[in-house]
Structures are given as C-alpha cells and as structure tokens.
Length: 446
Image (cartoon, rainbow, N blue to C red; front, side, top):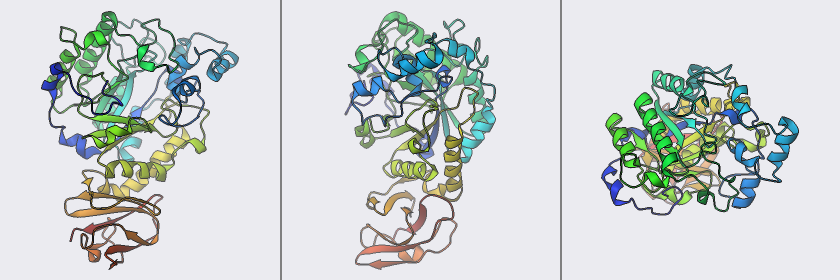
C-alpha cells in the first residue's frame, strides 16, 4: 500500500485522479484528530513509547494504543488481557458500547478549543478497527452510536460544529480492518497486513459506508487507515475508483490520504516515527497523539504527554519542512478532553494567538538551517522569514550571508528586536517569551 511505502506508484486505473492539491490544504497546516469510541470506556494501554521505535511483536503485545484494546486483550499473555480479566471480568468488548455515555459531549465547546489552538481542520474517527460506527452506517444494525451507547450521530454533530466555526471537516474510516465483520485471528505483528479482510463481502460493506459518509457529510478530508479490501481495488461497480469519482464530484476541493491501499492519494502520511520517508515526498501530513496513544489512556500521565511548548515545537518542525500536523486528542467516555490534553491545547492556543503568522499560509525557507541547540526553525510568508527560536539572549542564525535584513528584525506585533550581522551570520538578541513556547522573530529578505 502507499502508506509507509517509499515512492509508491499508482496503478493505471487510479492515475486519472492525480491533480494539484488544493491550496487550502497546503495553507491550513494544523488540524485536530479525534479518536473516540467504545475503547474510551476501558481506556487502558501500556505507554511503552512511540510507533516506529519498537519491535512489531513487542508493540502488539504491549500496544500503547488504547484504541487497539479489542485486539490486545485477545493476545494470550498480554498485560492488557490480564487487566481485562481482573478489572472487567473478561466481558465481551461490545458491552463497552452500551457503557459509553457521551454524557458530557459538547461538540461546540470542543471545536471552540480546537479553533483557539489554531487548528483549521477536524478529523474525527467514524469507524475504527473495532467496527463500531459513530453514525447510523448501512448494514451495522444496532452496532453504532445512534442505536446504542451515546444514541447520537456523533459524525453529524462534529461536522456541524466544525463548519459553524469555520473549520474544514474530515472523516477517518478504517477501511483495512474491522474486527467485528470478519472472524480473523488477532494481530500479533507478524505482519499486520497479512491478517485483514480482503474479500468482496467486506468490500461491499466498507464501500457502502464510505459512500454514505460522502453523501451525508461531504468531508473535506477523506482519511482512510491501514488499507482497503483487495476485492475493491480493480475496476468494477464497487471499486474504490467509484468511491473517488463520487467523492470528487461531491467535494471538488477535497483531499484524500495515502492509506486506502495502493490506489490514489493527494497527500502522504507519517505517524509518530513511522513512515518518515514520506515526509520528503510532495504534500504530506504527520499525525500523533498528545501522548503515546490516540484513544484516551488513563494510564498515561504528564511524563508521556506533550505540553503546549512541546506541541508547538513539533508543529513548527513539521511546518518548516513543508508538512501539515494532525494532532490527536482522545476524549474520555463522557466526551470530555482530559485535563492534561486540554492544558496542552490551551497553551498552544496562547502561543498561536501571538505567533500564528509563522504557521498559517507559510512555505518553507530552505536557505536557513534548522538547529537543535538552541532550537531554531524557519518558515516564510512572501518576503518575510519567520525565525522560530526556543531560547532567549544572543542566538546566531545559520543563514546565508546577506540573505536577511537584520535591521528589520521584529516580533510579530512589530516590536523591534536587536540584531546584527556577525561573521556572515545574523545574531539576534531574542527577548524573553511572553507565552510558553518558542519566540518568533520576523526578518525581511534582503
């Protein structure tokens, strides 16, 4: 598949969908991912580290993704299985759907927080690998949030709130995995994609779901995950090519990610440390959680989470290299953003209120060299270069001699910043920050 694959090539059937990526997606830079499901009731996983840094077998048995709980508890000898037995009596996973209350879910309040943090698009899960849908999806019977548990069309509510706040709206859909639809062995990392539903029956089921998402919600971002059933890749009445035709007819400025199997994509994706090669290929997006999990994990604490300045540094690192950043939050079962996650977003919002001009609508500035000590990144808006510096006092920028005008150095609000040329470099006297996070100094191109 295209996901996490170096230089994938589209099959002939899908080449007709190649096009310029809409400018809105290139400019927006920052989005919010939301993983919320029945897995938010047990909300349990081992916070062992980031994807891409751990052996696949070790990863699966000790999976830090709480949204994979239904798989991890099926692996004999896993700590999650032991936890499930001791705390939940080994009960069927679907009982968590009935216990999922969404009693405090206020989409307008959540979206206001995301918007204040500077996010321009929202992508909630509509069906994760457990197969439970967050809308009344065709063929799901009562196994959805309209019929059970929350008894609400969560997709519709998120869509309405996002668009009312001026955000673009996307839908995450797990096309490659559905642990309820097919009775396959649990994934143990050997390897993941050899143990997924690929047949025509599952393709028909998933095809109907995605077609329904498009028809009902017209998502600006069609965000797939893991794969697409092989039976739906060739041409035919239920080919993924038909989905794409329907999608672009309904949403001409929509964008599609690279996790729909080896079919078509508008942008590539990476996740934590996995798939980093895609970050050098055209339009791309990095996603990660504030902690090590996407779904809420009650085991995680501040030692596992990004704080606001850490999230800002990650955002600016991604944007300075030409990517978008999709930062995930995992609400608890009631629909509340846990305190440490909310605090992170509020701190990002404080920073963006002052410095968003260094993020939105920017491009890369390859002439400037990033640095780690002190931490420095560069973005560009027209003839203005934004130096983003996580330090105070004298800082030397590694930039070509004569490229920037030291006399123009200023904060985003116009406050002058002392600067000089020294040995062919620009030296800034960076003021102490007024909000947590790096300082932005704007300089005109010389």
